[in-house]
Length: 339
Ligand SMILES: [Zn+2]
Ligand SMILES: [Zn+2]
Image (cartoon, rainbow, N blue to C red; front, top):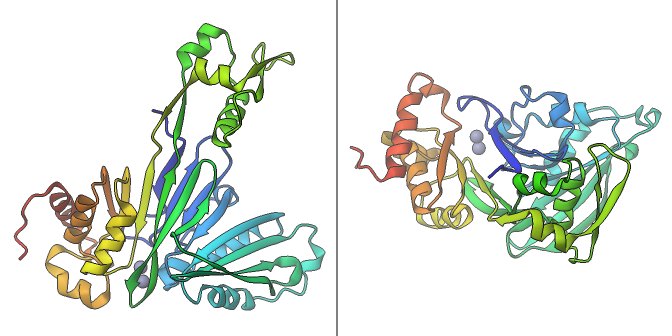
């Protein structure tokens, strides 16, 4: 199966946490957390449509300025989600700069900001053309944890404990479309952008009579008009989509564990923080962070396929092998020497 979405950590596990999900067939990306994002080229940041900020501790939010610097002066809207107080955190960042020259730009970036509470979402827009003064402030009910739902994927959240509320996230591809290359050759259909149109039509739930224009030749200007129903029958295989989850900065206790396991259940890849060693459970509890072993136990209980630990404490820069090993052992159900 050729994936349509590619997740990758922004930094080495000892660096600031962050996850990028790139869309392989579109110029688009999603970003989770805004710590040090200097490794991401401007061309990648310009593809980001939505940013999901777990919380605004500095290692998760100080890259906001770089993102803004790159997108400023563009005609673009970026939606940012964050926990309690997120609107005032974003507003405070924006008030830190002088915007008297914004009217000299032809294009205006808009930031749509969403603050997540247990039962409601608070929203506001910040537009460069208005010198980033908040506008369109609204409040809406929020119940099922789904922050974003598009034809191809959805993003779910859970509010976790970290002395402050901290958001965990799960990305779920609704289903995966495979194009049968063998049939493409047999039928003499040339590859090209029409295949993306075909996928889009399926994701959007168009009816079988919907017409797709299939070029007669590669880069040709003549087309056959073929119904979506026919093309689905001839070319398309549907399989379950990917699930990718992201958990940082949180504590291991029964209530919180349940929230995490429910959110990340059956993920294909589970990105989980692991700042501390297995022997540092007390330190983890005190600082509201997970240990390597706890990350492994969470992944195991949630039945995830692959566990990727990261957000290692700088203190353990020479013991990263141990962090990986302890997480992997707990994930595989091997006993460790920790009580
Ligand atoms: Zn934190
Ligand atoms: Zn952190």
